[in-house]
Structures are given as C-alpha cells and as structure tokens.
Length: 423
Image 1 (tube, rainbow, N blue to C red):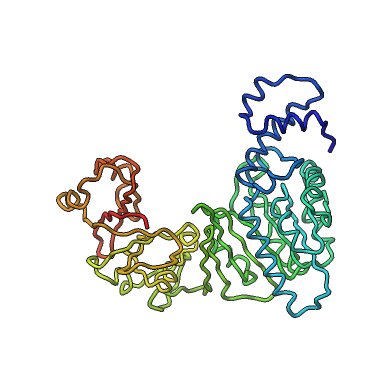
Image 2: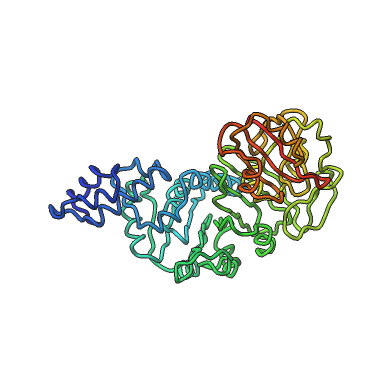
C-alpha cells in the first residue's frame, strides 16, 4: 500500500488530538490523503487502549471502525498464543522434535489473534476473503516481525478443502449477517464450524474456535458431539469477552473448563450430562448451571457470616457454583443468590471479596440500624424483588462511596441487605 510521506507525517502530528477537531481544521492539499489520515488517527487511538503493542509500532495501518471493534484485545490475543503454545507442546511430546509446525487462521480479520499466535509456529497462514484486510495484513505483518506469515485472499471453506495437513487451525466465525446485524447461533455464523467440524479435524489435530460469549457453552459443547476437549471462558475487567473451544480428534466426555478474568484463573473438569453439587450429589442439569444442595446452601448460620464473595464474570458464565463452594469452602447465601459467605477470610477467591459489617431483613427497624450513618452506597441486587434503582430510592441513598450493599434472598426465602466493605 502506497501512502505518501506527508500523509504519515500528518497522522503522527495529530494522532493524539480529537479526530473531529482535526477534520474541522485540517487544510486539504500538500499531498495529504485526509480521509485515510483521519481513519488512521481514530484507529491508532482505539489501538492505544486495546492494542498497546500495535500502537507502539510505527507505520501500522488500522482498518475501518467495525473490524477494530470486532478484533481481540491484546490480553485475549496473548492468552490464545499461550494456549496455542501449550497445546502444541503437548501435541509434539510424542512426535519427532524436528517436525515443522504450522498454523492456519481461516478467518484472519484484522490479524490481531494471528499476529500473536503465529509467533508460536514455524509457518503461519492468514486467510481472509476481504481484499482490503488482506492488503492491510501484507503491509502490517513485516512491521510486526512476521516474515514467515503468508496471506491468502480467498474464501475460508474453499481454502480448507484444498488445505494440506497442518498443526492447528484457528477460526473466529463472523458474527454479523449480510445486513450487518449481530448473530449468535453457531450455525448462523460464517463459516459454519459445526458443518465443517469433521473436515477441520481431518486437516488438523487441533482446532481452536473463538465464539460469542453470549452462547450457552454447555449446549455448544454438546453440539460438537464430544470433539471439545477444552472450554476457555475469558473475561477482562470483569466483562466476559470470549468463549474459546479446543477441538481434537479423540472423543472427550468431560472437557476441561478454564475460567479466566485478568489474573484470576480457575480450572475444573465438566462432567457433561450431569453436575455435582458441593456435597458431591449428582443432578441432571438442563441449563448447565450447577445446582447446590439445600444442605450446603447457607450451611453456616447468618450470625457467623463475616465475609461475602461475588464470583467474577467468567465464573458466572460457567455456572460452576458448586465447584467454587467446595474448593474454597464458601457457602451460598441462597440457591439463586450467586453470592457466597464464610466465617473466615478466603484467599484466592475468583471474584471480589467483602467484609460484612451488618445484615438486615427488609424490616424498617433492622434497616435503620444496619444502615445508620450511611448516605452513599454502591448497590447490587441478586435474586431480589427490587431493582437497584427501586432499592436505592427506598433506602434514600446516593450512589458511590466505599460501602457496598448486596440485596438478595437466602435459602429460607428471606430478603436480606448486607452492608459490606471491599477487601
């Protein structure tokens, strides 16, 4: 791609300024491609937050807004690279160490995931049907020290059918239809990974698939009929960003589930078709959320509740409440509260921890005593009849401050308000 020196100089000079102001005051001429420059300034500003490594690399070209919005963050891309390396090392343990390794990304997009994963392999191929994104990739990859990367402008399914065997295939199916609207069902994405599953596993012993975090991962695993060996639920900043599946040729009845939220990681084995509560009692599960036995729920009396725990977004998505109850010796306040308590502090809980200062029912006298002196609070509700706004209005509290109120329903059906301080 040929970009004039004056255009690059203009971008470098104004990239930290408000794009609208730059557009308003820019003088046309002097060989500057203004529309391209404005697009690059906006892209660099988004990348400086989402992809700091890329923003620090001079000369990269950023795509239009939609590909930038859809691309992975640096954190999630680096996670995939580490996962790919781990999977590859396991795969090569019984193979000839001299064997060359190869990656094919069938849905290249902006190339963020590819740029990090490609470093793990001897050879890497980027496939993308949009020619403009391929042009950007050809420009960017040498600047990112990816001399071993090949760019193919073609349809992913067509490439797959002609593909020689490789070490790993990566796919991030497009989650927008022809009209630009978001889609979430696997069969509605492009390419249809379910339809291509058998062919993918013929071409590679390892297939990594990135899917929408909106999907029911239990149903998704079942849809792949035993091919899923690992499920990675990735969150950052306590916001669920991605669902990653690792497919292999051998059938697997109990995939490994990894819940990631920044530096917090929890792993467990999912026994599909049934779940176990914290007492080890198996139950059928239709929605994938692990039920909790009544004997475990609220197993310690409320008078001994000293600490409260709120699971992070990946744990909530996984629904592995019995796992964390058993592993960390914490007790659910109620069967649907998704909040846990303990008499002693627990280290390493995958979520937020709070010290309980007082507990009240919705009785006016109890509330007045428990909330004495409080003017501001951060309020959260879990399985509670009032919304946050309704409860805030009822309690006459302003938003903010250092106090956290959790309103929920316990195992006996009582509506409780817990006053806490963040640990």
